[in-house]
Amino acid sequence: MKNLFYQSIEKQFHEYLKRSRYDKKDLSKVNTLRNLWQNFMNELLNNNQNYTELLSIAPDQQDPLGSLYQFFYEHKIIPEKGKLRIIVKDPKQREPGKVYTPRKIISFIINLIKNSINKDFPNKKSNENNNSKQQLKIADISCGTGRFLTHWWLKDLENASKHKKIKETKYFGFDIDPTAVKIANQTPIKNVVWKNIDTLFDSYLDQNDQFDIIIGNPPYIESRAISDDNWNNLKKKYESAFKKFDISVVFLEKIVSLLKPNGWAGIIITNKWLVSDYGERIRKILLIKTHIEYIIDVSHLLLFKSSSTYPIIIIFQKLGQDNSDSSNFQTKLVQINDINELDSFFLKNQTYPINQVHQSFFLKSPKNIISSNLDSSSMQILEHLWNLERKNEAILLGDYKCPYELRKGIHTGNVKGKLFTANPPNNDPMYKHAVTSRYRVDRFKISWQGFWVHYNKKLIDRTQGEYGSLREEWIFEAQPKIFIKLFGTRIQAAIDHLRYYANNSLILLIRKQTEEGFKYNPENWYVSRDEEFYYILGVLNSQLISDYYKTLYKHTHVRGNYLQFYIKDLKNIPLIIPNQTNISIMKKIAAVAQNLTEFYRSVKLKSSEIEKLEKKLNVFVNKLYKKLD
Image (tube, rainbow, N blue to C red; front, side, top):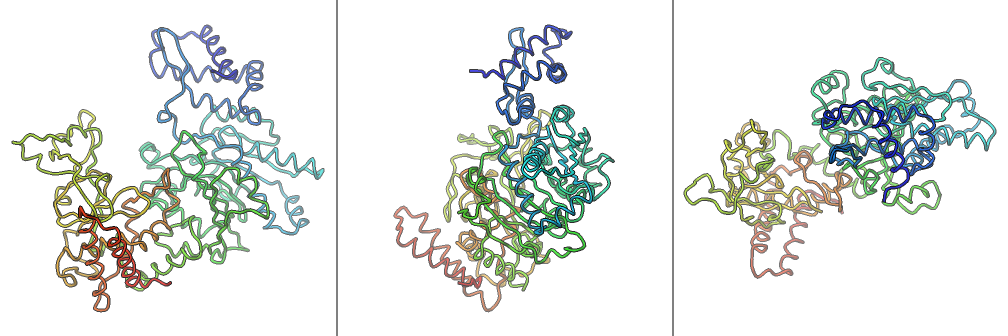
């Protein structure tokens, strides 16, 4: 059943249609429909009586303006049997970067900043004197309908009524969406500047050190959704526009530049930049130029139903001359699993753990990776394994001097039916390749999926909009090779001797074709390539390496707490470099991994024997990596 809010909008829309001058023949065109919807919204906002009545029945009475904007963002009109109907948009069709931040989250972020500021100025009198000297400037550089600024203003009003004193505060809201800014203009905030500008490029925000506080929810737009022109301009202007960046990292850099020295920021943002390759530069900027007070993992909460982002809340202070060294600062890491925990966060008897990490710890990590999933024991493991690499005892799997490389399986795109078949013609040699996938790969075990691949690149007709990639044939023909599943609760790898082909739900580990520039030549250390790859298989399937990976990347989970095993992340796994002292234990690991492979293939599987071998494998790997107990 449609609620009163929906019914009222629908009624006013049909009344607007009667007054509009659109040609009925044009109403089947997408652009015409979009313009009609936009013009209706503008008229509604300008009709004070209808607008006021509508806001009085909005679903969220504490934020009726937000309710209105969300409605227009989530709905569209379509022609149906000669009439126009309002329907809910498919989430995939919605404009990227626009999400509705829950009120509880906004309030929580504002409380976090206010608490952090009070800790920064423990002496109340000095704090008040500091604020009285100049006007406090608060900004949201992707303000939407102004919800963050409205909440801050309401909290200041509440505080003023208690203490009979109003702080001199000026508010600034900037957004590229003219409709959102038009709605923001209807808010009751006093002493506010709303501007419909492109925050990242407008000259109004070219000057640095402008604001005392910046709050908000920067847009998350993936690299593929950024236009080529915008992409190139961002690359020229922003240091953090690195590799396949998403737009949120550029907003982060902009926030740091716009903050005054000692100013504070509190935002909710996707967690991907914490560990991704493209986030390397923004991590360095934050770790050097700011004190990261909090990283709060809220990725387990379903905050944005129409979006697949996994958010964190980050609170940081831009460094000034009096606190320019960030090496001794502590960062508080918190995980929130229930939105009701936000209410009790500031109570003394909170039950969830808050782990504190020296900010300098992240500066030691590979590519300055920031993990929000750390405690004292996991930090000890990470520090130990990183030291092995620093001491030249280990090499990262992604190092250019490493003898191995990781590659993706076949990308079937929109031509899977052309490429894979269960019934190949007998007389076509192109169908000779058996296919496996993540459904047929487990730890130490691999089997056939029941399909064959038609390995013919001419099958993909790009002139007809078809896409996909068969990859290079040699990576599948490599023997042996290792398959790693893309998703799982731990690393799951299996060795292949049968030249299986695979789709991109699997990652392939193979020996590089060239042998020039390697840190070491595997041929000098192993009896055979089988022994060499069984050793790597044992290391990948060990508990130590799975724990290491999980510690670094657990917060990038997908629903159900499954981890994603991407090439860019697997490249940070350290492999011990063989020498005369450790080669014997490497060979033992290879032997155990081979035995486990044979046991898992066996029809008469003995769980007790497997358990013994698994335990032995973990003991050997821990010994090789000199793991501290």
